[in-house]
Length: 267
Image (cartoon, rainbow, N blue to C red; front, side, top):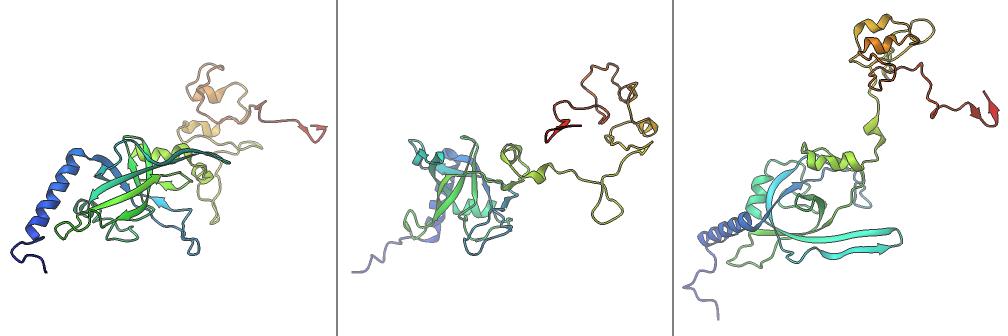
């Protein structure tokens, strides 16, 4: 027979009360984490991945950690390529809170829910977790509503993605682990052509030299070979043994970086 018509199994007021209670519980027992949406830069449509993706924003939101006895998954395992960390965690977030926090985010691939591939920064354990699966039907339609998302996450391994969120604790991961050589490139001044060039400060005699921007202006007419330590004196260094020289002096040889022996010949 059909359900009892005299009992309402999920009206709007009950659903709102149920959701408010969940939000309150998350605020009491949850953890403050940061949600980092992934921005695709050069997606591989065949493999369905983007090795050059970046993360440019982070949103603080409270989530509840379902794991009470520690991380799940295989955890620390030894494979032929070394030790791998397979720490998994299950996080619960309110749909209403997530939508309110992320409503201004335009980089979401799917705008209506958390996305697989996005990151969660967990400050308590100082680690990133990548969302592997988003469960949107648990608990299963109590009072005809599902007010939470359950995020199945695993510890994320950094692989030279760009992380520029503006938060130091998050961005320092890229600074410490990045192997991108372009992060250390020299920005040259604009030359006579479109490619740019390094502009020398002076070309006295047959040599040119480069000075720091903080160098005194009068150094431009000094001789390039610093035989009497004029560079050091002009920059405020009074002793020849002082290592705080802020002028690039190319007249001194580096015995550890320059070799006079090449292919069996002495030069």
